[in-house]
Structure formats: structure tokens, C-alpha cells
Image 1 (cartoon, rainbow, N blue to C red):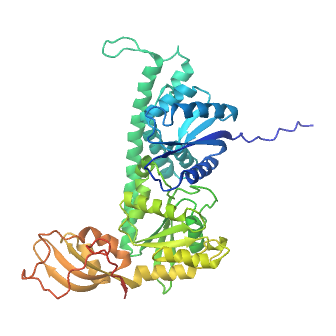
Image 2: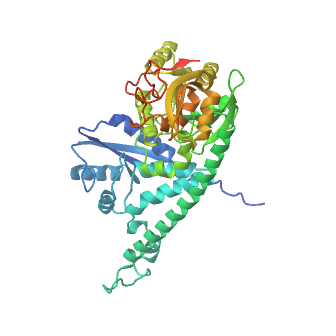
Length: 475
């Protein structure tokens, strides 16, 4: 009789203790309590159990330990009492602060910050080679200035006696930890250079795909929003796709593009992108440049908002901040207020719609409002025209022909430097012409300069002109 093998066991989750700080005069997007609640969700997504938390109000962060010395001792006692294995700070720690905290807590607990936690979640959820490369690059670039002996693999294995020794500049012998630290730094820099080269290939590959899409003249709609707002669920609803969906933060990282038929037989490509979050690490924004370019090259952005979330407006503001950081603020935005199926009072959805301009209320889960959404998307891409005046260099022949083919041309004037065109363009094309909408003062057409003039002033792109008025009208 064969012996029964033991059942496989799940590795126990580590116990985490959270630390949040409120700095006087610095109002974050979320209140301290809500920010810590979000940090707890991030910890759960990373596979950690939160066992406690501590907060402190400061005029400014402590340069050595971020929190004050007294609070450090309090946290030390609480962490020991609760048997915490990880301390998570809700802010990004400087290299010096991390080193000092590691000295104080020694090997009793691991010290990480919000950025490290998010990077770890991204590493767990990156399923494609591109995603893995992007996350690895972000991790190394963040880790490099924070490298200490505790990070070095050979020094730990050597135990102080089996590492490398050597001399530099005739100064004399140095310990194994210090020498290994330099070796690790050099290896990391070499790895960073390799990852950047690989991602540049990915970026070039994506660029070719986008050029092919533009030649096909099918507009691109990018889904953006706070993490867990329901973007992947919406893409699945629109396209019967099989994008992974889970009720957790950053469930999907890799962009997915699907074709959608709009009312009237028009087509559009919908792309699901990585979710945003407040305090999104700078290293991630840089590493995910190739992916985020899918947003910056879109014709229309669908900003998906979870209207059931108590901090929906703050989350929306965080998304707008990130869009500005990646220079996508000029692209037309349609706000999609999602999860209305969770509202007990339908009037609340209507009230929320009124607080968001150019918005549609839907439930991606049940399909409620989807037909209205597609109708509005079709109108934004194909029917709604916006006034615009541009000066295009002759080398931009493709844009010149696009304006004539798809736009309503009201004025055309040729000069030595290029062609001036005034008229109206479909909303999906506005972003492509935006770099040419601000006419240099020397090139604006004053009266009597040989241009044909009417009584109407030149109209710039809405949101970029002096009045910032929405002159949009339907064709």
C-alpha cells in the first residue's frame, strides 16, 4: 500500500504594520485615513496581512527616520508586540532614511515604502515579457541609490570572511561588504542599460503598430482610470474579450487592444491600459513609457470612474494629474461613471453625472448604459467637430491631406514656411494637430498681410486659446 503524500501547504502571509504621516500645509489627494486604507488594500494585493498601523502629524519629515524619534520607539514596541514582519511607510523613503531605519530595527523587520510595495505588486502581475522588462527596470532604478550591504547576495553568503577584498588607488584593503556593494552597483547599472535597450526595441515595435493603425484610419480609444475602477470589465463587455478581471488593485498591467463596432457601422480600437493611483512612483511612469504612449497617441480617452467609491473625485483628480505628467492632457476625454449597479438610489447616479462634464453613467458588469456610451463615443469620434486653426509645414503633407479629407476647411493660405488652414475637425483628429495650433506671433496673420480675412478672429483649439471656451458643436 503506497504511502499517502502530504497535502501541499500554502506559505503563510507575512504580517505587515502600516505607518502614515500627515505633513502640515501639504494636502494630499486623499485624507490620511483614506490613504492608509488604500495602502492596506495594496498590502493585501501583495499577499500581506495588515496587523496594525500608526500615524503622526509633522511639520516636516525627519531627515533621518521620516517619523520622529519618539514615534520610532513606539512603532518598534508595537511591531514587536504584534509580531509584525514588515513595516510599510505610506510615503517614499529617501536612501538615507531607509538606511537609518534598517540600522534601528536591525533584522527584526523589513522596512519598505509605498513605492517598493507597488513595484512588488507590478512584479507579481506582469504576465508578458514587456511588462516584466518594465517592472524590472523600475525596480532596479529605484533600488540602485538605496543599495546597502543588506541587499548584497555574496556578502550575506560569505558571512564576512569569504567575500572579495582588494585595494583601490593604493588606499589599502577594504571589507567584503564594501567591495561587493560596488560590484552589485556595477552589475545593476549594466542590467539597467540592457533593459533600456530591450524596452527601446519594444517602443519601436509599438510605434510601427501605431503607424499601421493610423494608416488604417481607425480611431483609437484608450481606457484610463484609477486602479480597480472597472476598465478591464468594460473592455470585456464591449468586445467579449477575456481580459483578466479581479476585485483588487492592479489586476492587469499589460495593454490589450480590441476592435469595437459603433452605432452607424463605424469602427474604433479600444485599448485597456494600466490603472493609475495616487503617488504613482516616478520610476514606474518612466519604465512604462512604451505602454503609456498608447494613451498619448489615442484619439479619445475614456476616463473610467468608480462612482461608488467615497473618494471618487480625488481618484479622478489623481488620474488627471498623471495624464498631465505623461503629456496627454490635450486629448479629448469622455468620463465613464461605472458601477451604477451598486447604487441603491438611481438618482445618485444622475447627480454624479452632473458633477462630471461630458460623462455617461454605466454598469460594465450588467451592461446598463453601454448602448448610450457607444453612441456618445461614435459622436465624439465621427460627428462632433471642433474649430481649429493651424499652420502646417509642407513636410506634414499627411496632416494637410487629412484636414482636407476629413475636416471642414474654411480658409487656406500658402506661404513660404507652410500652409495655414482654418476650419473644423472631428474630435478624434484634434490631438494630432495640437502641436501646430499655437501660431508664433511672427506668423499670425495681421490685417493687410495678403491673407484672406473675415470678420471672425482666428479660433484656437478649445482649452489652449486665451478664452478657453468650448466652441464645440455637432456637425
